[in-house]
Image (cartoon, rainbow, N blue to C red; front, side, top):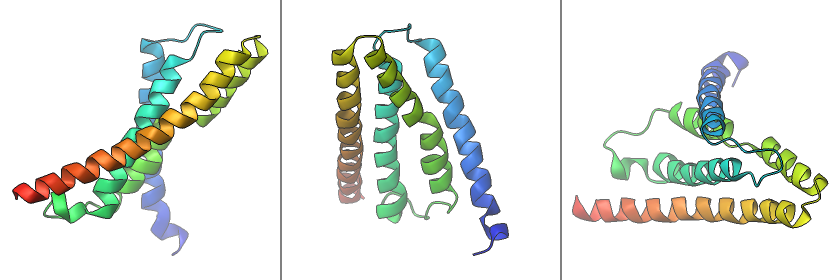
Length: 143
């Protein structure tokens, strides 16, 4: 596939990324993290984004016609998954905040944040996938 054919995908990823990044920035404006404090906002944003990605991947890739009579638009997955969720979640901020906690003489908090984010993010993806699969199956039983 040539570059010209990929331009719509690049466009929707960029648009979704802009919306996701703006939402993430808005979350930090609403609940700012003071210098040296535990970065709860980034943790919640990353875990929420992971859960949302789990839900989306089930709905958009596994059984899209089981919950909708028409398949999803092919640009919806790159817009929401790579774009929005990719822009909303933030690995770079997570690693920087971990480094700052460690550097500020708070190794326990830094390591808790480092490991806690990984565990809760993985649990959020798993929960999003599991709950969505169950909801799709339950909805199919009522149809």
